[in-house]
Length: 351
Image 1 (cartoon, rainbow, N blue to C red):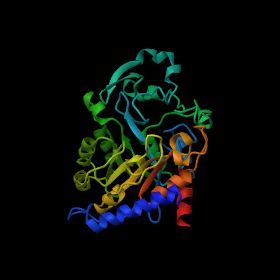
Image 2 (cartoon, rainbow, N blue to C red):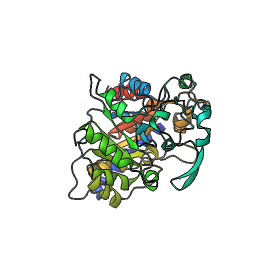
Image 3 (cartoon, one colour):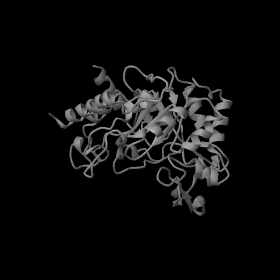
Image 4 (tube, helix red, strand yellow):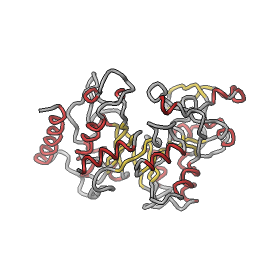
């Protein structure tokens, strides 16, 4: 049997064992799990079509929709004047040309993010007008030179501008904003939760059925915004390792979604090879939670060792095989830098 076949058989065995001995029994009040997209998982464009164009630009979001994405994901940070802009981090150095602007040289500083000192240019030290003078750059140019060829072409955009664009589309597209580092802003006397809630309220997008889902790595931040809006909310969970049933029970009472690092479902060994899958998808579904998974990329450097095509980190490996593993476990959505490849894999699984 192939390694892939063994992994899939292992997933089935785990599910059967759980059913037989009652290990993952859901709490009595758990709501039934109803997939949001049938058949196949929702395709979320991770930072836009970020495998092809510099991330978090309107052009990357537009391309993502053209490539078949159901959802676009803007990470949100705050400017000095409280505007929500789409950037992966408060620090601008890796994804903009800020260092090429001598007029901003004195803005470089060191601040603490998640308890660690970080040196760079921070979006919250710039007004939106100043941010608009910057241009986006590819974050990993050695891996994605085709995207880096567009460095300097595209403006940075606000979430308000993204919502304006979405409103012009012929087909409905969900936006899935991630509030980045809420506690960082809280320490500065700012509230990214209130900024996002106010914007959604102004646009009438703060309802349960609004085409806006909200995510964060900070659980307390999600509880805060849940008091302000009625949108679907989800917790991002990094790393790998067991998530206890008691923790899942708590999430089922307070969240709609858990959004997992792939390693939470298929752990990797020290050499990067896949190990037997966990039963987290089944246990979450039994509690009525959706399971979203991140991040699917095509290049060898990001793939499990099982699916790499060569030692070239930038070359594409067997990305379809990785998608298939997760699709076969019934995940509800996948984040991908290449939404067209996620759609391709979905079509193959349907066939």
